[in-house]
Image (tube, rainbow, N blue to C red):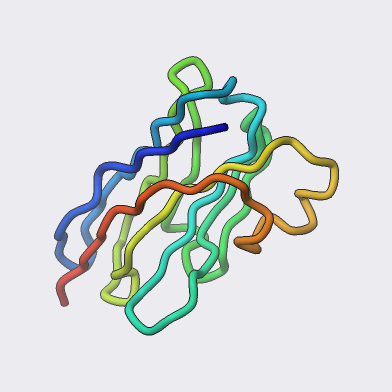
Length: 128
C-alpha cells in the first residue's frame, strides 16, 4: 500500500511557475514508478508526466514538454512536478500516482490504469 499526498497547487498568472510535490509513505519509494495526471472540469484524466522508480527515465505529454520537469528524491520519498511558462489551459486538478515496478509499465505509463495508487489531487489555476 502507498499513500500519496500532493501539495503546491494554487493560483498563478499566465507565464508563471509552480512546483507540485507528492509525498509518499507506506512503501519504499524507489520501488514504484510515479506519474502525474491532470483533470479539468468535464474532461477525462490526462497524462502529464512520468518518471521511473530510479529516476533515470522521464516521459512527458507533448503539450508540456519543455515547460514541465518531473523529478523525484527517493531519499525523501517525494516526487516533484516543476511547471514553468504556465498557460491558461494548464488549469486543472493535478494528481500524482504510483505503480509498482513492472516490466510492462514503460508501455503503459500514459494510461491511468497503469497506476495502483493515487493522491487526492491539488488544484492549479492559471489566470489569463
